Each structure stands twice: as structure tokens, then as C-alpha cells.
Length: 276
Image 1 (cartoon, rainbow, N blue to C red):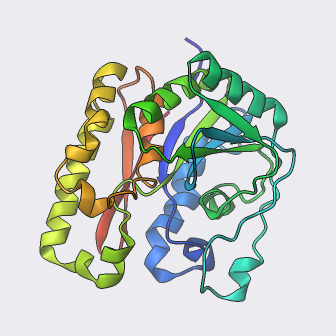
Image 2 (image 1 turned 90 degrees about the horizontal axis):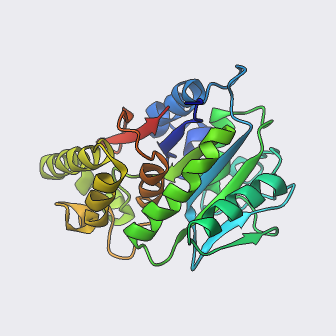
């Protein structure tokens, strides 16, 4: 079997803070700078010819694909120093790869459209500034769905999996372990009870991610809202930071050898998952 490009579900950090050097983001920043480039085999003959990135910060009614040759940046965060609004990431887009993505989705019954005007949000350019600062690999940004339907997101990932044989890597940019801003700002995440709940949650997520067989894995993710702690980690109507992981789990196909790494943030274990 030919080599497949990797699939990675990353934790992208809080706003622009990983790039600004905020101490609270130190572990996530280090992982984005060191671990992810190795997984992607950047700087080698096997580095991907393009990266398809599913971002938590773009929710649409149908899967939407950035399709221009060049994209502006959306500084979709507020209250940070001026330098956060001067960041640049000049990687090219690729209308050709966008067409491949569109065709793969349509062939698998996933409704999709292309958008040549949409800029890249911080779920794209913040991690990529750390992962691949030379910005030489074309990037295609994809949305998650406002429906938050897990079966559709998993099928969406299954459709993308065919691109891996063409050396197109897939990145899910979100925060699978926990994204509840109200809890983060309240300080409840530092309590022993919340840390225990987060640990239990991470164990269930890892069990689903590492389940053998694409269909069995799909069944587990379809029931994720019933997992203990689901609404504490991702509040009702706020699943957008978990959905990129579901897409990645689908894109992994029949591969069962999921790997993971851990970072610490707000006193919690924040996990990222990958298949290579």
C-alpha cells in the first residue's frame, strides 16, 4: 500500500497567545513547533504537497472550502496587543486542491461549496505560524457544520481520507479535550473535581479515537454527547472545537494505530491525536 499523508487533530491554543509567547501556552507552543512538524515530515522529501485544515472557527450550513490562490487573515480575537493584529501568514491557497476536496466530498454524498473570498481565521494561521513558519505549503481551509451532527462530520472525514494517498495531509484545528470559556474564566477548571472530570472525559475520547475499525469508531463518536462530562467540556451549542477531531477520526479510515500527545493548559491535560 502506498504511503498515506498524516492526519492530525491539534489543540491550537488560546487566541494568538501561542504566537505571542504567553507562558500559559508554553507547552502547546512547543508541541506545535516541534512535534507537529515531525509528524508532517516537514523539511523532508515526504512532506505534504498541501494541507487541508478543518477549523473550529468557521461554522457553515454546508462544508465550505477556501478556494482562492491567496487569502487574507481574519484576526477573529479581541483585546490583545497590537502585534496580534499585524501577524502575517503568506502561504498560498490552491484552487486545484480545493477542487480535489470538493470532488471527494461530492462523490461521497457530502454537500459542499467553494468560497474564494473567505479569509483564514486564527484557527488556521496561529498554529501554522508555529508549525510551518516558512509558509511554502498550500493551505485549504474547511469549515465545520452548524448542525454539529457527528455522523455527518465523521462521513465528511471519511470522504477526505482519499486525499491522503495524494500526499495531502489533514489537520483538525480545535480543542477536543475542553473548550468551555465560561469555565475557563471562572477558575472552576483548577478544582480537583473538574480535573477529575476532565481526566475521565479524556479517557473516553481516547477510547473512541483508538477504536479499531472505521465503522465501530463511527458508532462511538455518534454518541459523544452522551459521554460523561460532554456538556462541561463543550457546552450546548458549542461543539465546534470538538468537531475537527470527529472529522479526523473519519479521515483515519481503517487505521487503528492512533497516537497522541499531551500538553497542559489552565491546569488541565490537553490531548492531541494523530495518525501517520
